[in-house]
Amino acid sequence: MILPIVGYGHPTLRKTAEPITPDYPNLKELVANMYETMYNADGVGLAAPQIDLPIRLFVVGFRPYDEKTNTYGEPTEEHTVINPEIVSFGDKKDWFNEGCLSVPDIHEDVLRPTTLRLRWMDEDWQQHEEEIDGLFARVAQHEIDHLDGKVFTDRLSSLRRTMLKRRLNDIQTGRIQTRYRMKPNKK
Ligand code: ZN
Image (cartoon, rainbow, N blue to C red):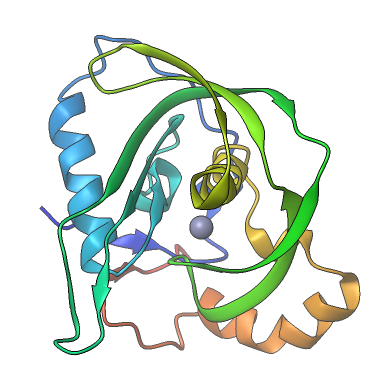
């Protein structure tokens, strides 16, 4: 089931999300719905606060895109990440152009560590601890920010944020068009 996504300015995106326990109700169904919602919106990551659920859970998925047919293939990599803990960061940082399903049509370069050591539970409640890099490392940090009540535009310079102010305000007040369904912000 495709769930509506909340946008910039929604109060749930500003909450610190809570850890969950293995008896969390209908966890497998929730995770399946989050993958479906993410792929429907052509996203590569989706955190539970983005579907108005302030819990420490996010999904990540990468699918190859075929330019000739304009379609996506089967996912080549997927991660369900529950109660993540960043154990440590690597020394190197780089810039990467980020976007967010909750902040439609805004793409900005963000500086983050390129590698990190991450510990998490998956949907079968198996523990993982891995040194992660590449796109997974990038998306994981973006999604963990969501669990901590942050969005990627918070990490931009104050000059960039000032320049984006009107567009962020348009998202906040619902004056935007998206291909996927969004949940209106509470007044
Ligand atoms: Zn996001």
